[in-house]
Image (tube, rainbow, N blue to C red; front, side, top):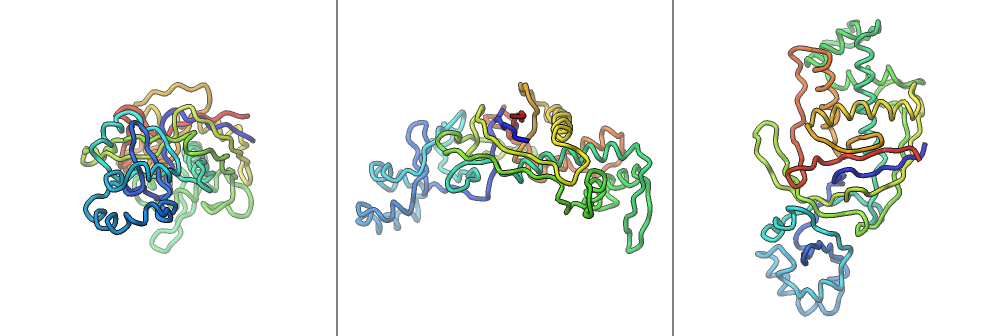
Length: 322
């Protein structure tokens, strides 16, 4: 099934790469990422090299070290700076977390979308199994014990069994074929098409709030602009659900997540959140434990909460069948 992915709020999917102030130039409301290899190969740069190296020991921002006319010759791409990030960057030349790219272009990895879809299927499978007559065998202290699905799910959420056991159980409920564990090949999601950074990216400032300390840490991100569209393809493999059912489960689950996050988003399609990593699974377990009325659960809430410009939640997209 071919689908269109449309960004509803700023989204960041990282690769671990960070852009240092020595690699970018700020001019007005634009962030210019520089092609450093091209700069260092430029004959006009060579007379400035020694002084540049000395000065870089104390000044990290390249815009204070080299002529802007020289730097403009080596712009890799330019993207707008949005919201409160404009004022922040005037006085804070800090690292910017880069959006994942392939051959220099921006795309949405199939693995990221697949992980978010799995969170919804994981939640649904456990909720349905909780009221079933299913039994599950699990090892405890080296010995196998058999529990009802209700007992196993309850005790897992209370911390008696490892998360991997719970994931294997969920996979056994919705996969088909020989391998029915978390290692099963159950679903294919092909990477989206790719776009130029200048067409789809912006620089955003997020306040990342810790659930324990309550403190807010400002972090700069390359994010997708709102309203940007990508094309991708999903395909059911060894699973009892077809693509339409998975998308339906996804929409239902992420509406609960949206409500839990106390956020409001307008959409006329299926909503889903990307770029949350392991936080998505913590949210699945937390919502499940609360809905089932399980007491003394040991599911930790997401460790951080990210807001762009102190208002917009990160990561929300809309899915539609093409």
